[in-house]
Length: 142
Image (tube, rainbow, N blue to C red; front, top):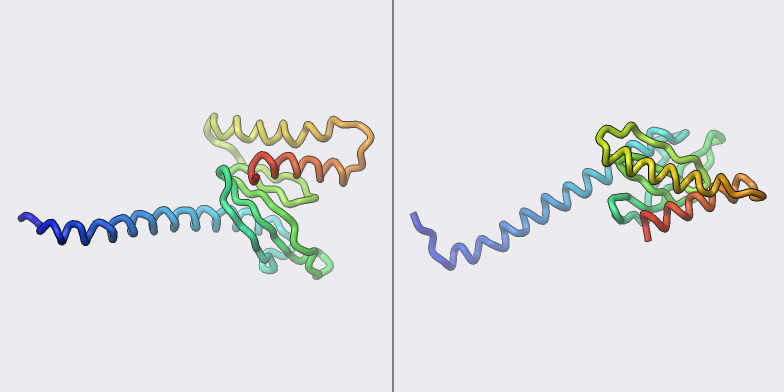
């Protein structure tokens, strides 16, 4: 059976919208997965609030605010979440197990970036953490 040409031209936009919706849903699912992995490591996972999120170079970048062990919110801090690691500003990098060689190489690149700042002499540990984070932010989020 042959469809009339005007019916086909009418169906094409709906087919494109369906493809776009699937791609957008895939991005949202990936972002949710990265947030969930990060939240599990927080002192009070249920208190996490996110804002200013964006996908950039295979990483989720944004700001997170969560309660500390004293029960108070710490204020919004920038974060970077990737399928292989996440880091919150002024905190250590958390790595996930890598399975394929490409993931291992990407994780090694991140480890090299974070270790570069540690090798500098004469800086306080907070400054080292800030400089590590800034390098990763420039690498993944800018």
